[in-house]
Amino acid sequence: MSTPYNMAFACIKCCKSFKREFDMAPKDYPKELPCSECGGVAYNYGRHFKAPKKNDTAQWKKIEFLHEHGFRFQKIRIGSGHHDVVPYPENMEQAKEFVVKYKEYAIDA
Image: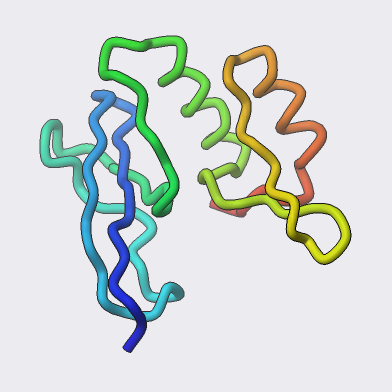
């Protein structure tokens, strides 16, 4: 068994996030769970995802945009030895550039 991790899930529909612990191989982590608030889909954004406040609509729209383009807040490593981690964009303008620049790292839904 692997080390248990708290994975962050977020529902874009109602802007709610929550964490769940899994003690299984990372390949077996669920990609989504039902949202505990609205019953919609809460997506697994990994252990490093930091959700914005519920009322920060600009940030939630950015998250939705990144999600639609295949970015699930996975670490993107570039550079020699792939030790340099690319920071995720802070706003929508940066997000639009990000999805073009790093499209090869997008995850198929």
